[in-house]
Image (cartoon, rainbow, N blue to C red; front, side, top):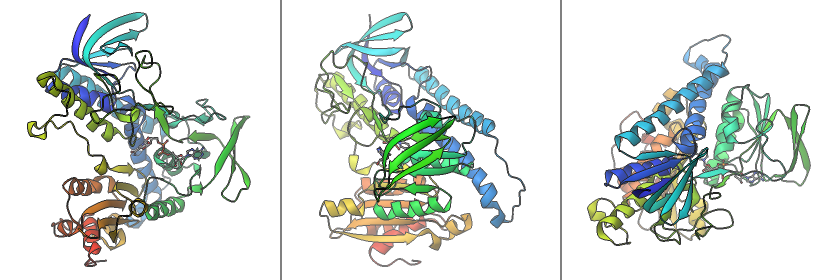
Amino acid sequence: MEKFDYAIIGAGPGGYVSAIRAAQLGLKTALIEKDERLGGTCLNVGCIPSKALLESSELFYQAGHKFKEHGIIIDNVRSDLPIMMTRKNIIVKTLTDGIDDLMKKNQVSVLCGTGRLSSSDSITVQNGNETTSIEANALLLAMGSIPIELPFMPFDGKYIVNSTDALSFDAVPERLIVVGAGAIGLELGCVWSRLGSKVSAVEMLPQIAPFADRQMSIMLQRSLKSQGLEFYLGSTVTGAEVKTGRVSLTFEDAKGEIKTLDGDRILVAVGRKPNSRNTGLKDIGVNIEKNGSIPVDLNFQTNIQGVYAIGDLIHGPMLAHKAEDEGIAVAEIVAHHRRTGLRTRPSNQAGNPGHVNYDTIPNVIYTSPELAVVGLSEEQAKEKNIKYKTGKFYFRGNGRALSLGETDGLVKILAEEETGKLLGVHILGPRASDLIAEAVIAMEFGVTAEKLARTIHAHPTLSEAVKEAAMAVNKRSIHG
Ligand code: NAI
């Protein structure tokens, strides 16, 4: 039986990144993946294909609605869905092939098949009729998550669909009903709305993008409504029926009235659950919570010594970049253990801190405008009894946003009242996904709003809106 220092089940962003980091640190590493392609949900049926379609659909929308104001006249703008889908598939393939190359370059052994723990230091890999067994000193569980199904309306792949199906529709649905106005519901709702669907979103909570600061959520909803999306908030879905190629969704709205929506398809996007089943975890005694989540200690170790878990399998937001950083941390912890025999967290001095800062994980929804967040919302700051000041700057006052024709939205900064330290940064606007990086770095290094305000930002850029919001914290915004 081949023996490894480190074996990982699941080649999503958590698993494959951990494999590379482990190889860099000299660990003999195996990466086990059941799907044909590496990259997991993120690369194959999540972040990347959705961004490809968001870009194509946004360009189509702009050509039809916004080019005129630039003096660009295109008559009869049409979309070609098969070309869009091919482009999306090529992007996915380029990236997943790239991971194959990275594995080769780093001498990570990739084992194709379904991994199953047979003990705390051995895994069987089943690929069709072939079974391979390997041993490893440390095991990482990185199997990710799967879409949650509503029990009374199971996925059928055609009419009641999940996010994977909604990335590959063969035609633009005339009417698309979306259940759940979180990240997936909003992003895929936007894709199909821009391509011509009438999209209605039914959300259980009183606001869309529930993790977001309330003001930002309201503004995003307003923008999306102006683009044609329809929202039913505070609504409880009670059932769905498929009849003669059409679907209808029944729900109780916020006023307690029973409503029915008819459409071509229903996208159910009510969250994802940890994919912790069928991996032999229970047989070897790994604790699993009722929702499938795996409890881990500060070093990402499960209750079984030498068995670690990360990403969507454990607590915290289900985000690719969170999984990546956890994967790096575990590789550093495992390498430290092998080097020293200690099961403690490695010291920062070695440059391999094995640590994730959960207070500075950015969260982005790639709608137009984009919503990007790091740190606390106003509601969370109030709940924690933290005294704070806010500074806001609207993109309509930013020259670059005006020249882009993207003036919807604002930057809002929360800073601790006494120290001025940044508590949260919320950006709704063009390229918010890129702008948030500055805020993440600032928060990671404990920067104050004043320090951010006194940092020179290039002119004319969207990033000046961040500087202006920081200045506004101390009531001295220049252009606001
Ligand atoms: P989500 O947790 O973001 O949103 C689910 C929404 O469904 C919530 O607003 C929730 O209140 C609502 N909901 C739950 N049950 C419902 C019901 N019975 N009826 C109506 N509404 C209901 O989950 P989502 O959008 O499915 O995404 C899954 C995971 O993937 C999330 O953790 C998300 O962070 C991640 N993701 C991240 C993306 C990004 O970073 N841009 C993109 C897509 C997904």
